[in-house]
Amino acid sequence: MIKLFQILILRYFNLTLLKPSFVNAKFRHVDLRGVDLSYSNLRQADFSYADLSFGGLRRRDTNLSHANLERARLVRANLFQANLRRANLTRAQLEHAQLTNADLNNCCLISVQMNYAELAGAKLGTANLTGANLRHSNLKNADLRRANLTDAQLQCADLYGADLEGANLTGANLGGAGVTSARLRDVNFASAILRSSDLHYSDLRRANLAHSDLTDADLTHCDLTGANLSGAYLIHCDLTGANLTDTYVSGVDLTDVIGADFTGAILE
Image (cartoon, rainbow, N blue to C red):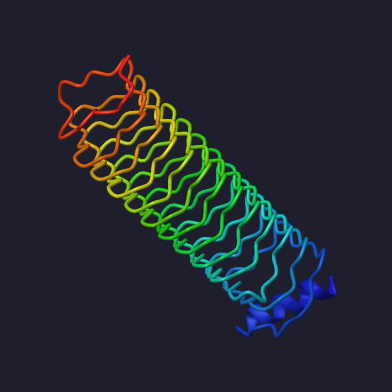
């Protein structure tokens, strides 16, 4: 109760905490809108259903590792460089949140709302983003290696230079997304929607694009060596300059494909 009272006093006077410790603290359902908790040790704290909108949780010294933020509201919160490793953010609301260079490795982000979030340079390795809403988010140079993005919504997201090696994007929607110069080796795009997406100069070696929708997509100068395009929709898909060596292209209508050289591809 004392810690909660301290927080409420700080909120009332618009003050900032100076490296306090709230390890294992309970803030369930607490209204913390606008409170600056930057530099605090909040490891394993319970913020489930709490409202931290417009608050500050920035910098690496802000430790939210293993914290419970399930269904917490963090709209427009500042989490720049924050440590959220292994935190639970299931169904949390982070629309327009600032998460540039934040550490979200191994986080549970199932059905999280992160549309329009700033995630440039964020670390999301092996994070569970199943069903996440990342529409219009900025994921430039983000680390999403081996992340689970099954059924995630990434329409119009910016993934320039992002590393998604080994990630699972089965059924994900990347319509209109910018995925240029990205590392997409061994990514599972099975049944994903990539309509009008821009993937030029990306590394798609051994990627699984079976039954994906690549209508009007730009795959110019991509490396698709060993990739699987079986059953994919390639209507007006631009493959100019793409490397299709050992690429599986069975069950595909190639009538309207643009600029593709299937020399070395496996056509069945």
